[in-house]
Length: 438
Image (tube, rainbow, N blue to C red; front, side, top):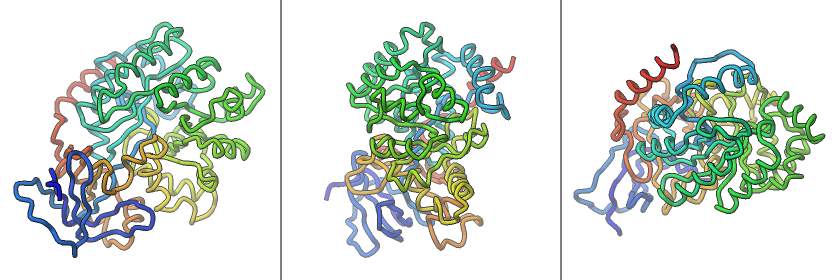
């Protein structure tokens, strides 16, 4: 047996592999960033002297959470413009604030603040779409978090891209700089929406993405007003319009997907488009409720996302899971709809599949990347433990995460960051927020 770099032992293991029950007092062997062995209590345990051991006794050990859609550096605008309709919030508050205050420096520190928040709440992988994405990629790389980092594409002047005619050239150059640079970072493109990107922009963005074998992200039918505007412009429902443009395929990640009719859901399923559900953002902006239960019945891959901190206002996927489960029941008036197991899959292997990473992360299996977290069960609100899945979704919160490991590297141990200086990051963000405030 190969000598591991790290041993995690003593916890209750939740692999998230279909049909596998929790394993008590399990041992995980991690070697060169991957899971090299999973051992049950009765298995013979070699004596690996000098190997780092993480005692997980009294915890749940599970895959790290996958935030399938976010705008991480928008931590800078948390609480800046609350309780507004989406269009007013976006065009009157957020776009002007981004135009004035975003830069390589501010995006870097805003993204690092988001990394602190995500690590502290058990997120090990994030899909991010924003501007000045070289800064975001550097922040993720420093933090040690796994990420799909997508350059934002929009057909009017944007932060870092004052000439809209250059939006795709900037995006392509970003992909070329970061493609295969890091085991943790994958580049990509993020088209803002069908109402802010022309048909030509959408088609060319997809062509670039497919040329590099990367996914293309787009906000789709987030509000009823947005969907109706697409119909007015094109004479077609948004998904049918994307189909006519040739954009429906496994490379497309459709975010929000709130206002879809039956035919649109069938089309998305037929073409295996990935869906990201952002329930808290949709609720806060009164965008509506996505038909997640019906999407899952059609075997669509659905992940879970927080969206940005300006419309959520946090990056805690535990809160997102709880909300998704309960909102799904309200939407269908069915208490069995979107149960704990379903929602936990969305936040782990489901999100990994949407991002095209399910062969590497999302479950704890030998050969997969060692991206995992432990949840401290020694909390009053987590006792007693009858069903680990229900406890995670309905009782736990991000603050219950004790340890975080990405690519075999410990990023947080006993609630203490091992690589980032939280005080430095928060001090820098306070300086930036003082400038924004004035």
